[in-house]
Image (cartoon, rainbow, N blue to C red; front, side, top):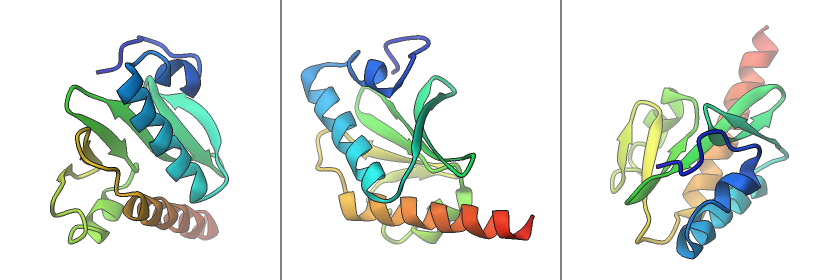
Length: 124
């Protein structure tokens, strides 16, 4: 769970965890950034990545997993086959801390979320 109540930025959030957890969170942060150009922020006391004023995704460290929240149930549903081996809910994926991050899948999820945001903004 989040060890600091109100992190001021993503770096302070990440640095509140153990060496192993920092490594996982830093790797996840880099994978997300590799999928697009984002502004880093804090949303709901979690590290968040903003694209064109919209949150693309957030993450949070828990005891046994990292929660990835792509802010879209449609995205989770779209990747349901690839996410079969992970615990999911309408808007979240649990990435076990004792397994390697599925970097390619995370990038695909983030890129799909960018596409979803672009489509919504075009309709406005």
